[in-house]
Length: 320
Image (cartoon, rainbow, N blue to C red; front, side, top):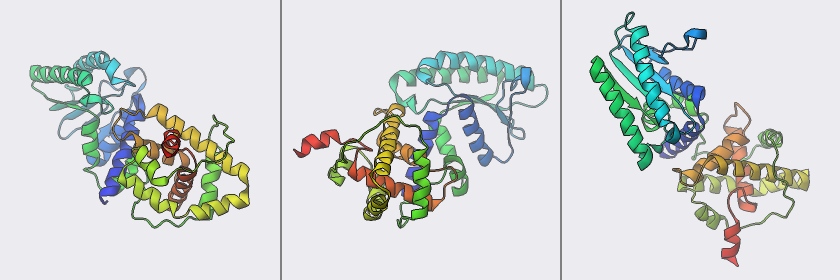
């Protein structure tokens, strides 16, 4: 992986962290741990027994993990504290007779909000309780949050990282749009749910100004520049398909952009690049290859340049 690949991998992982609650977060954690430690065993709930206060463990080292993935850590921290104390005592009672518990880790999806002052104080309170529980039982304890899980991810090899985050867009790829792949992408996008119905002509802002206005990184800028080389090919494609299809795809992209704004707020880290990756991932059929991914980005670059996948209304005022 080069520097761009690692950056895009991180953006994709951040999107997974922000969208993973409950079981989805537990599945994400156990997947990373399964790659990180070959002896890691995930514990699945079994009827009335549940998971017996243990979501995963490494038997040889006596390391045990309990996972908590609330929708909003800011409003759920007290629940996390209550769950921690209950799970810790339950783990000791249910497992210590069978195995030696050396370490206990509480894994919390704080969605990278541990850096915010109000959340940071609560996270520190959670850490203090974990420390005191460990001291009373003479067990090493620790708290794992999103940034720690990200560090674990990037200790994996490239294939395992891709298995976790998905196909990574390669910035060094040479874009040459494949019409067969473009057809597949368009059919997938057409099947996405519709919300907006916009019929006005496409507005064409200055491409570079639009990138700057939307706070897109240099890495995403390079991708858009490379994909935009194929603007004429995509335009020719729509010329033979008709304006109806062109407008339908535009409406779908606008829907995806509005959806990304609802899910990814401006006060979140890398929000604009994360929105770009969100749209890209939603626009691709499942199990896509590099050619499909490139065709998707060529289509995105076409609409980025000619309409409002990203913001344009202020640019209109600036240019007057």
